[in-house]
Length: 164
Image (cartoon, rainbow, N blue to C red; front, side, top):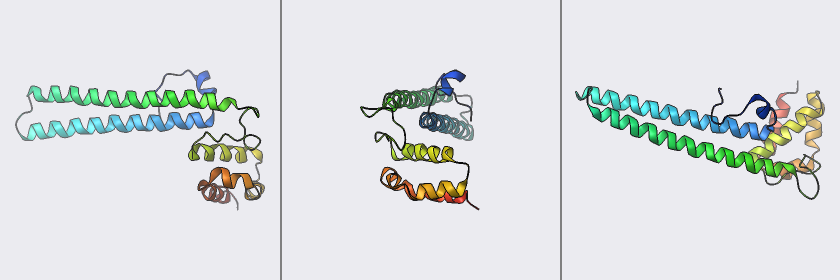
């Protein structure tokens, strides 16, 4: 996937956390979907005009401009939302009075459930290379059960799938 929703240099991308990278990928997917839907709408309009003998009409040019403007506005909303989320995450990732946010020492409860899932998954993937030990450690983690909520079973299944 080519990331072009926001302009960042390679060092800037290296500074993003896994949660922030996930946010960028989701926003890029939304942008790609918006542009694909706009292209599909233009193609359907053109086929309809051709079928009704209006192929050389200026109606298509006006409609194409309208579709492009609507798509650009929708992409801009996604981009602004992404920039807001990145800025908010950057503030939230700094920490609180207990120190910097790190799972499990000082978990960040400002994250969404899916972002928490990514944080805990990354933590356990980096703890050890042994999948059985990783699964056993996760199973004994009582904080993860309350921190992840409904995603606990999903992460357990994922970690179990790595075992023999």
